[in-house]
Every structure is written in structure tokens, then in C-alpha cells.
Length: 194
Length: 163
Image (cartoon, rainbow over all chains, first blue to last red; front, side):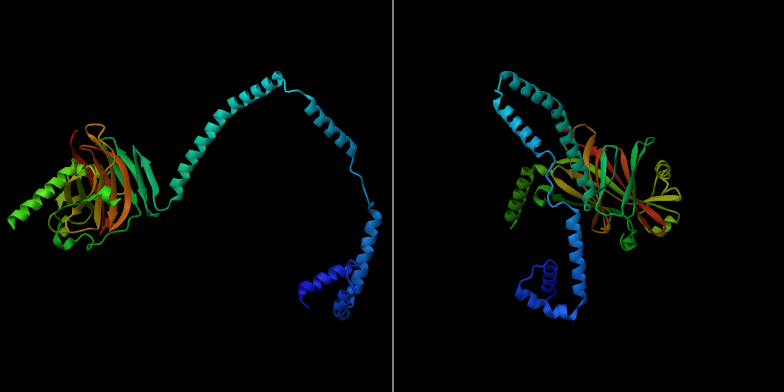
């Protein structure tokens, strides 16, 4: 017998809920485990004790009061005519609500927008803002690269100190040819490329 | 054959004239400097010692303070085209250090231009710098180590054509 079926039959046997066929099905298990009878006897005894100590039926407290109060409220609501005074009060309430809510909603939208911008910057690992200052921003796709912008007031120039770059070798700089001024490079049409 | 070549050249000229992105809006100079304690003679031909004022400026940076000698390894001047990304190769024959320049906005002041500068190291885009450059004011990028010293890349807007 499968364990699930066995558990189901045993549970219902404890509650006296088995049919004759099911009882016959369970008999081999009960025969092999006589301690189950003792366990069942203890359970039935405990159930009986519990039933004796707790009242069979308890009425909810003051149910009539709640029912009657609700009825009164419903009747009063249906009897009150929709006077202009009532409408005016409602409109005034709405207006006060709007006065308070409009700036609050605006602030919430601006805050959410700024939060979204910030999370977009920090969440994107492929384009990381590593430094900003002096009307400029520095990005690096490499996580180990950090920068520091130094403004030299004396010479009115800017120094960008970059840390974390891989060192270069002689072959990288084509040293064998000697150092001469470089080529003019080349141009890529931005509109066609991107 | 000559006629065909002339026609081809004429067509190219017409195409160039029709592309407003090819308008030259300024010129930028890129240099690679090197700070070292070694002898400049070991660097072979083509190196140029830096002026004292420039050395003094570089030595203010803590990372470059220990170096006694500063030389220029390479330099290139390049036009900035309005609608093109310009690639500069300051050391002749080496593609390990390259920079790109792309104008980001129209010229609002006569001597300033916002450029999107990318620093490429060994075919990898390593740094992007969005910055307003002013004519004659040099920007120094204290870059990677090489041998016993440090490489420095400079960018300077040397002229800007007024609209």
C-alpha cells in the first residue's frame, strides 16, 4: 500500500470514518502494528475530554446590536435627500483634498523619476559612471577602472587620473620603429554607423 | 581612362560637398607623454623633452611625483568633423593607444566645444569622457604604466571655426 493511502486510512480510522471495505483494507497494517490501537484509544479519550470542557455552541456577542445598527445606517442613508448643502460640503472636501494632493503627487513623480535615473546609472554595468565634475562625466565599461578629476587652477588645465588600466609592453607601442608623430587617423560617419 | 578618373573625382567632390557632416569645425591635438626615472636615450629616436612648466604641472599629481624625466613620445593633429567620429593615433604604428572625438553640441561659445572623447587601449574602449573643451587648454589623462614609468595622454583643442 502506498504511504499516502495508508496515512489517509489511518487518519480516518482515528476519527471513526472508515467504511467496511476500507477497514478491511487497513486490517493488515493494524495487525502488524498493534500499538496503533492504543494510540487511537488515547486520541479518542482526549477528544472526549475536549468536547466536555468546551461548550458545543457559543453565540457571537450582541449580534442583534450590530445587525440593527447596520440597518439603521442603511435606512438613514437612503432617506437623506441629496441637498445642495451636502454636495457643496463634498465638493469643498474634494477641493481641499486636491490642494494637498497635487503637490504631493508632483513631488512623488519627480522623486520616482530621479530615483529611476539614479538606478539606471548604477545598475548598468556596461556603462559605469566613474567620476563627474567640472561640467564633465567619465564612464568606463571596466569595473576595475576608477578616475579622479583634478582641476589645476594655476595653469587652468584639467588632469584626469585613471587607475586600474592594464600596463603596456614595448610591443604594444611599436617601439622598434622609434617614436615619431602619429598618423592622422581616420573618420567614421556617425549617422551611418549608429 | 583619364576622363573616367576625372569623372570619378568630380563625383567624389560633389558627394563630399553634399555631406554636411564633413564640415570641419575645429582641430584637436593628441599627444602621448611619458614620465620615467630612466634615461630618455633608451627610448630610441623621436622623443622630445617637455618644457619645465609642463613638467612642474605634471609633478603636482601624486602618481607622477616620483618621476624625474618627462618626454613626448608621439603627437597628432586632427580635424574635427561635424558629423563624424574622428580616430586619432598619436603614436605612429601603434594601435594600443587611440582616441576618438565626436562633437556633441553646436558651438555655443566662440572658444568652447563639447566633445565626447573615448580612450581606447588595445582595441578596447576603456574610458568615455563627455567634456567641454576650450581652445588652448590642455587636458591630461594619466594613463597606464609602461616600463618603469607612466604614460600620459593629452588632448587639446587647438582651434575652433566660428559659424
